[in-house]
Length: 433
Image 1 (tube, rainbow, N blue to C red):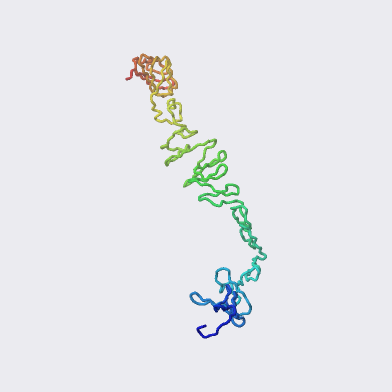
Image 2: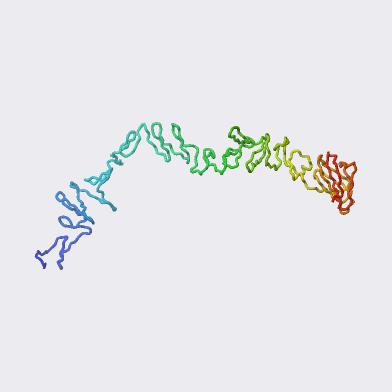
């Protein structure tokens, strides 16, 4: 029996039930349901409140403070509010141009263009916006047709599009007061520092490779390069010249001689100096002449100098246009080969020596030069008693020809001085020791 006053329950109505053996009262519920309604049944779709009489609401307390109450609008009708299928926050208001209806909860954009029309965006003539959101340019203007890679430009009364070009790296060119156009010439996509652009072939722009200290120079075919060794002019066609203007007045022009020239090199002095010319009187100071030139190299007292004399030139005495060095003038004694016929070739010596290993029966003199003077030394061999005849071009005092010393190893020296090519004054110094 209960411990307090009350009424005993003998039966129960669902969802309540009384155990017949234990008397325990239990509630039989529905999975996921709540107990609601006038009949107090479990339902998964409970309705709070009574239409027309009692407004239902649901409160949710905040974790910290405050309560959120969900309640319907005070209007007739039955509506359904579907929650999103992802985590998020329910909108409470909206920012322009969006509008959230306070009565229906509908989110709209009255000023936006929609596919069904009714938008509030309009255009200012000649631009118009259709209900479907299509922007148009009205007559007399034209509607632009897009061209991938094209360029928009202004015509006389409207905008237009210059269609794209199929060739890469063509330049946009002004049409003055008419339609612009793409250039036929193509340009490089990138360039190298310190390079010069030029037309490397028809309608193609390329680069000229630079060279330190070089000049821009074109070949005989007109191809430009930058080179430290430029060649001015074209062989057989154009004479190349280079001019230097004076600080006061006048111009000096360097140019090659006319006629076939071949390839020659003019080396400038290694120090500060002044070049000599052949048409004026210049003082030749510290100038070295090493090799024979061609033509009028330079002149001395009106005589054209064509080279430097060798020993053979000096001894022969026939050249009139070569410079003579001291090493050529002061030559060593030359040996003449002995023979029964001994020839003294005056073009080979100033001073000569012959060792007698026998008798000279014929003495020949060749290439005598007037004005030449020197000595001829006769040396007896170890036998001695060697003799010689004298050529008639040797002229002795009183017309008497001398005889050689006869002792073995004796040395006799003949001094000569040629007045003419057939008259050489001679004196024999005998047994010189």
